[in-house]
Length: 348
Image (cartoon, rainbow, N blue to C red; front, side):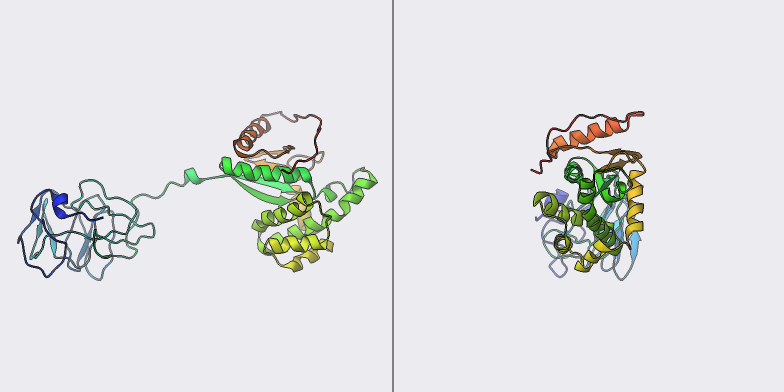
């Protein structure tokens, strides 16, 4: 984008050419009235009050509260009261290219889009090269990050449970529709039911589920809690979508998919991680009691079991369910809303 100084000043002052030295003078003293946002140059860089500049010499500060333009090596420009006077200008000023992202306010002398780079690197002018740079420019106002804040939501899962899997996929969909930040934690159905009166067939079904939760705890300890979601997703796809039995091969494949060391699969047969598994389990289950299972969700001091839903709602339907769940769960004295299930989990 090229802007000539005639467009900028609206007169013949500074009227032809670019801000370069070494050309024949067209006007010896061009004036631009009532604008003191530009300050003197020739390797003495002045800035406006709320901008910084970088060079090897003088850093001045004018009385203006607008962002100014920093330029290197043009003819000397001196602020005189409310007027600007160009001395020894051999050609009237135009300014070259600006590498930037924040416009200068209307009425600035050069009227170029002078922008404040997010990385605080500034270039100036409209049709040449970058003239000034570095990190001396500070933002006028700190960014307001409140609009970007997301509400933390904690989700406890056992990879074996199909209903927890459904709810986890729903919660990830909710995160696209509402400003929430889910975090995933491990609980264990085998541990939850170890002292309960359950059928032998169910107890036998729970026996191999120790493996995935132990590996998940070991992975979180080794690599951080952030690995739990990709590891859970890799396990869940194999257990629920592919219908595969839980064995070492499934665990190793899941670790590889999640970018984790295959050696973590050794934890599936070890009790070394059981105490930490129990701590994670109780952090969730103690909030809702032990007559329920997984999933458990905790948000802003409210915890609940569920929702148990199939198939997992998508899009705004997921967001609306979230709104409703929060409404009833946060109601004092509310405990249960239930009906008999008539469908198996639908993973579509």
